[in-house]
Length: 205
Image (cartoon, rainbow, N blue to C red; front, side, top):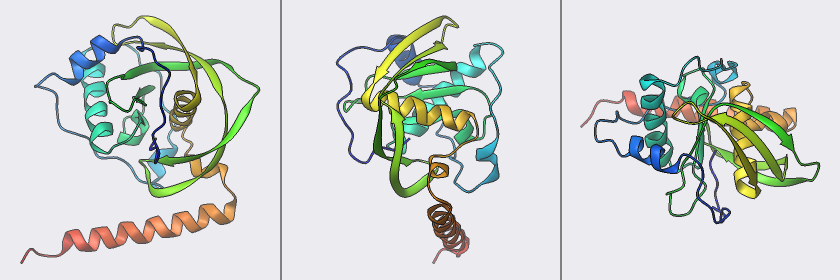
């Protein structure tokens, strides 16, 4: 997820902060990953549960944080980097020091109160539009040690969790919009991608 006007998160440390940062700051961590772009069909793949929280998953989490921070995003699902397993990384803090890892997440409660808010997405660059979401949620997920934790979230964090959970189900936020808007966005992004490819193919002078 991309937030064009980063809001203040709740003043609290999220579970898994220390261990996540230890992985992210590991100098041996690999480079950032490529982010899939809408309307690419792989974004519609439903993610499978993670079988074991092992070194491979911890390395994936480190790469996902690297990718998200480099792209100036606040959330990223493994689906977006073409890994179709249930892994999400999030950091909605202004200081970029409150990372949250959700492995095999399940929303166990969502508020009846909903709010229409503007959303963006790293897989849909340059596009922002309104989506209605619950204002508060509770989610259960494994941390980097494979321990089950419950997180209570509200405001921007709650929205980000719902947005990224959609990715794991193969859904992109623009699919909440009207068919007319979706088609316009699709046409724009396909054209932009073709132009980017032509530019990249030009020989250097």
